[in-house]
Length: 246
Image (cartoon, rainbow, N blue to C red):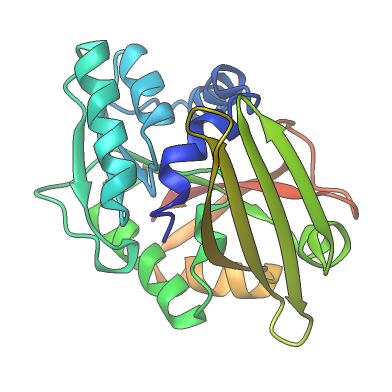
């Protein structure tokens, strides 16, 4: 997953305002008086969040299934002079050397686990390595976004020399979006090279999420609208979950 996307990811996500998002997540840890000393960044991608947390004085373990993403993450750690540890692992097979006192999974990464049993297992693995009474904070794209915003719609983006064609195929019964990505990047002399990627996202219901958390020994402390501290509205596209290990 994301093998071709890795090269283009940071260019296309440059407007995601990672600094603001990092500050928001840190404010959630502070709100519950649970700022971590050692943080798991699950599905860390190219390490942008991991490095931002490291700069705040937190020791970070970044885990991702994409070797290409992790290669870029390690380059950032070298450039930044951080000691972030990056591990190549599947979320549902997470295996750390010890426990952590905080965990995050951001940018709708858990939505990319489209099998519910695997979704539950990934959350269970996080809980296994999370110390008691500590927080696991994650965000998820909502059912509203899956059906009404992504749906069967097509999008075109042009950012930092990369042209992206994005086509969605929505399966309403399974609440799953299959996303077909075509990248076109200029490689010199006006020649554009095309690379393609196919990924999938599944929207989970509130009941499905709560059951998975309960089975993993995690309690929901708060559910917020994206980048806010108020409950999600009917048109919420991304929701943040603050959960605590019992």
